Image: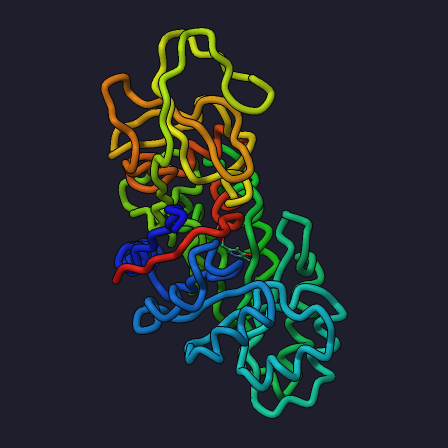
Length: 352
Ligand SMILES: *Cc1c(COP(=O)(O)O)cnc(C)c1O
């Protein structure tokens, strides 16, 4: 069997959840949208079921999948519905929809609810993607309050730049949010991972932990408080020694400068490893750091082996404990979120 494996450490997931919840205080949503950032939403939700105050997803299908697999905790639909008819399923599966636009609000009020619904009312505090402007927020809130089917309203907003500690945008958004919420009772939620870790004023009734739940720092680099849940590993399945001045791979973009032992490994961009992270992207062979040389191909890539090392059959970590995924993301000019969501074809193994 092709030896590309995503090892998912559910014990680390639980530890990260607890760490983030303790740090934030109050209640914590485990954000499991996009198949739990590529980790497997059903498995991750089950692993957290006895700990988590609730889950958050991006689409109705993602929420229904969790319900069908026995997840009973609250599930927030972070973007709300995409068409009015979806409120029927929101009602049936007892989901908590976000409301971030006028049509979502009107359709929710018009819908004949079978049971009271808890609404997450989104404010646009400055990111300018979705949500009610601060000056329109209290009228949206009041309209919902007057609807007999609305059991509760959670006031929430999302930060654009919480992963940049020096960026003043977060403070501006905090001020806009608090001003727009003046006089409106109820729970609040502001903090994504970066804010949970780094913006104490953003810690309110509910945190919303995504990337940090999976053990990855939203700031790049590492965070001692978090444990990486995924290890993506493969094996050397070919090796050769190349003479100095030999080209490697498509485009002949890399030439050896000395006699070089080269390992061929089973992972390529069709598996979600970023092609842009070619020569110099870090890997670890049996726990020792090395690097990709030449371009990443569709199904395989080439790495540098230490001169004395017999590589065949040895384990290569693409990211996990030795190689931080943020390093690979940086080499590829992207973020860890994107790398995780792109993983495919790997065999997933779950460890309790
Ligand atoms: C995805 C998402 C989060 C989680 O963000 P992280 O940076 O991964 O912690 C929180 N809130 C909302 C509204 C989101 O869409």
